[in-house]
Image (cartoon, rainbow, N blue to C red; front, side):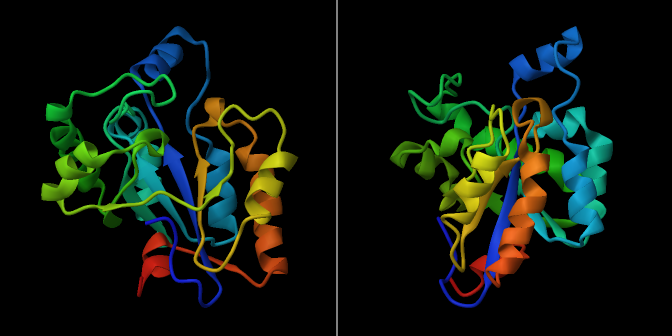
Length: 219
């Protein structure tokens, strides 16, 4: 799914929570402080904004209390973003490649990691880097997932200014859009600064944030 129906006024704000072994190494070595942007959560909670979070299993294991906070919010949905953000295809943003035989177990394991937290859990799944092919899709078929990409790419990973992110989102928004952002603070440091302006732009356009389930309803 790239987007929902182009009717109504709902759009889905989705946030990926990546975590690789390299990112864990950065945390342990003190090279970065955090891959969990609490300012994003604070804003969404304060303004009562619905959102869907695509969680990697390793992020959940590194941030169990923050995962609990997300799960406990009735306006937030939880979705699957693999266990360790490895690539499911070749040539995917220099991410290490998972063997084809491991793809199904990787995603199944992530659902198992997320499940104990409860909340609004879904069978939505997003590939790292949005990279997938027929073999990857075949591997996920037994799991009954809905693969979700998105039609509005914020470009927030490693951005150095917030204004381009606002333009990248607002210039492409339409009813039914799925916006891809990240909650991984050290790798997406400008997202929390851009988000208030994105929310204001939604209001100006008569668009309302909704969960992914609400946006995809009827698709």
